Length: 188
Image (cartoon, rainbow, N blue to C red):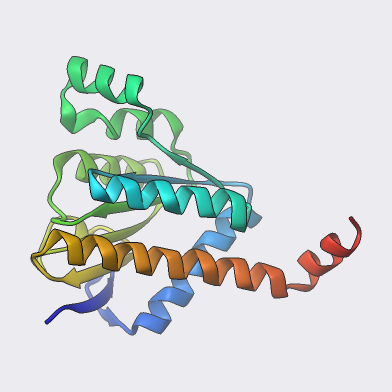
């Protein structure tokens, strides 16, 4: 059986609806305040964050960046070690008020954890998506921590894709329904 649970930074359990509302609020606040969203993930999780970045930029109109450019990723991996491939660009790009979305099936990937810590040190907000063990290292770091209770990569990655898609779709729906957006669309 696969379960999904969400906790806040203190470890308090939140309902999925409450957590989704808070996550969407954070996403929209980033856009409203001209900040950016940084996204990190490995393997299948890298594909998830690339899709989220696309939807955030195109559908939600929020500046979002993934750090998966192959030449940079391989140069950093070669020169600094794979643990630094997301921390280094986070150190370069992160600013207070930005949002980091970190996705790791195990929640224990060194490069994801280092990027998450770096973003917090820079004054960013953090939302995490993880799976496997309930006490994985990533799950204790975010203001919101979405956890999929499964040890099967495919289940965890698919659930993360569905959850993040729901968040971007919800943000898009809120923007479409807002009077400011309707006024701007009507003036085109």
